[in-house]
Length: 77
Image: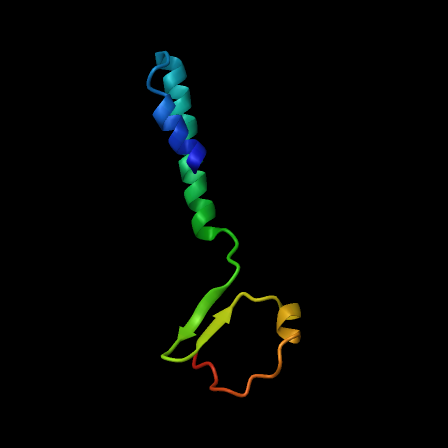
C-alpha cells in the first residue's frame, strides 16, 4: 500500500506515458493493499467482550493445548 502511495506522489514530474503507467501501477498497488488488508490472514479476532472477559478466536490449537482448562463463564456465541 505504501508503494502505491509513493507511486502516486512521484508520478507527477515524469512524461505523460510514464505518468499514466506509474499512476496505473500505483492504483493497482493501492487496491491490492486494501484487499490484502481486509481479507488477509488475521492472527486473533474478538468473539465476545464483556466487562471482565474477552473471548478470542483464531488462536492455534497447539497454543490452546498448553493452557489450563477454562472454568469461567462460557462463550455465548
